[in-house]
Amino acid sequence: MAIDQRKLQALLSRAVADIGANFHAALVVTGDKLGLFRALHELGPTTSADLAKHTGTHERYVREWLSAMAAGGYITYEGASQAFSLSEEQVVALFDADLPGAFLLAQATVKSEARITEIFRSGKGMGWHEHDPALFEGTERFFRPGYAVNLVPTWIPALDGVQAKLEQGGLVADIGCGHGSSTMLMAKAFPASRFVGFDYHRQSIERARQAAKQEGLDDRVTFEVASATDYPGRGYDLVAFFDSLHDMGDPVGVGHHVRRSLDATGAWMLVEPFAHDRLEENLNPVGRMYYAASTMLCTPNSLSQDVGAALGAQAGEAGLRRVATEAGFTRFRRAAETPFNLVFEARA
Image (cartoon, rainbow, N blue to C red; front, side, top):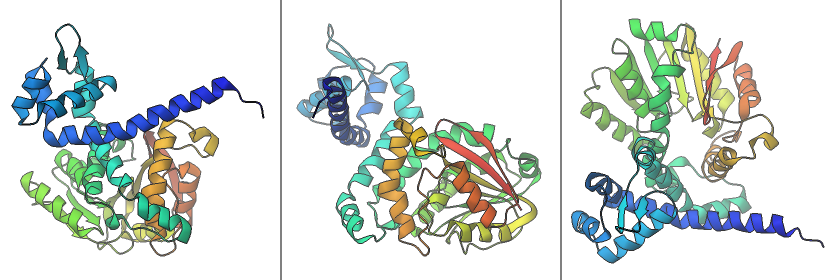
């Protein structure tokens, strides 16, 4: 068998990067929990000894952690002064984009490896609520920066007539809301409207209620425990699903319930992970991340429920259009997109 050494070396180099990334992910989470990134930003260029003193940590561990972060490009090291610091770009990535939150999500997922391996053999599912509790915080932190940048400025204006309704005073349901970040972003932008977030995970709903109270939004934002097929209420001007429909066991059944709950002129907004319709078009870094997450989280969650359609996180526009059409929606269009999300509008 002829071996192309260049291809082999490229694959091995990629594997080295991935193995390093696994170790690196755990250390990013550790640094976030200990406040090391934040302290480094506050202190400016500093040594491992000063950073350890400032954070009440052990210098030898901090020195090794700083070296790992510098090797990964997450912090900057100046050999002449032996000082570590954060560039402006690193600050944006770590705090505005909340990369530590994304790593927390990845690490929480890895903790389910033994169970995932088991269900590969049995074909059973694994519910969202059965994962490590860090998953719920990690998921919020992973998605929140993208929602903060796009939801109010771009996505809602892209929906036909929805922004005007919310400015005048509308009724909105956010399904699969988790900790409620998306719900509260909309509520802050549209103070004349009322918002209800629904999620089947009680602990997430309790966390969302606390956050709404802290933000002073609990007079017009409520959070309730309910599934996507039985959440209460009628006459919604907007029903929104943020990166959640593909996780559900019966997306067509969900669509039927959404259609019944909407006002006659209401809109169903679907925000889903970016994906092309053909597998070969998704063989890229974004596709790799979403296929991996889908294998560990989304597909098992769907298979744990009735029907178990298992759309997966890379369902693509054609697959989502089929769901909406089978659920009775007559209009379906792509309203907006980012490198990480597709935004669809469906109308009865």
